[in-house]
Amino acid sequence: IKDKKLTLRIYEEVKKVPYGVVVKVEKKLKKEPPPPLHSLTTLQREANKLFGYPASKSLAIAQRLYEHYKVISYPRTDSQYLAESNKPLVKEVLKKLGKEELIPAVDKVDKRVFNDRKLTDHHAIIPLATPPKGLTPEEKNIYHLIWRRFVGAFMGDYIYEVTTALVKVENYTFVSRGKTDIDLGWKSLYKETKEENKLPPLQKGEKVKKVKTLMEEKKTQPPPRYSEGMLLKKMEKLGLGTPATRAQ
Image (tube, rainbow, N blue to C red; front, side, top):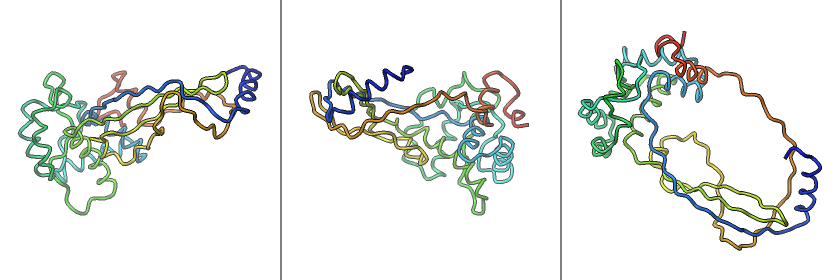
């Protein structure tokens, strides 16, 4: 609200009232499929976001995992898909990774994984074997990002319920939104994901206690400066460079 006098009036009216009444509760079940496999650019972006690695460092590590350790596929790729003919390879890799229970899913996943039409010169980056002991922490981190995108691609959808509640306090209606996990699916691999706001069970007509009334003054912020990850995304969108040259 941009009018400070109006804000104060609402604040004073609401402040006096100890209870609110739930006037509407709406629940929606939502599903989120696994994210696509990694291209070099998406790998660099995720590594920059999570670990602060410059794009050149992620590329160098991925190249080492490919050339020296031979535990990932060719990394200088802009594709996030595999060929239909890669299904036997994928089953073999899942077996090597100790994920045999996911093998039946290989024949069931749709075109979000195996899509000949969206292939470029090379397919998406995937693990090819378990890494040897003695990897540096940075090498482990990059390998893990590739590993979990690959394994997650054959896991179930992330299923959650979004609850929207409208609560009337005096003459004003306030909205509350919450999220409840039903089945984590592929998201169980993403430990750094923050737990989102959860609402208690609510019924229409229910009286709820108002704990406190707050009035906050805020200012809009300009868009943040580019991180390397954001810059890579923009370059990819504009067709600037190739996966192998954007880091430089």
